Image (cartoon, rainbow, N blue to C red):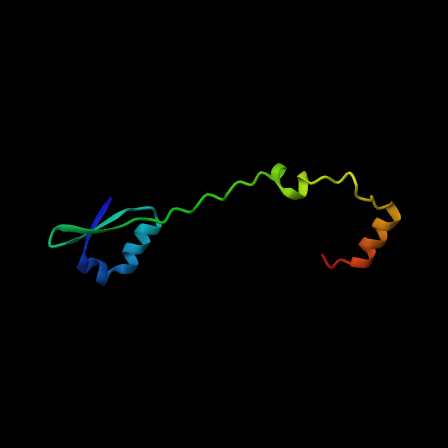
Length: 83
């Protein structure tokens, strides 16, 4: 952990920001008393998705009609790469 004064923050902001980007934590002091703390931002972990519980997967398809190979081919041809 590094320490910097309010004057350092004002005059050398770019350098201090470089330290924070590198993972350093900086305590800002005013007249020797800590008044603030600069800490690096921690990225949020991506949310995990359980695709097995998705409604598109769990819906009952037993009553739906299944396309034939020709119908599938025509549908893909008709889309013409516009996916």
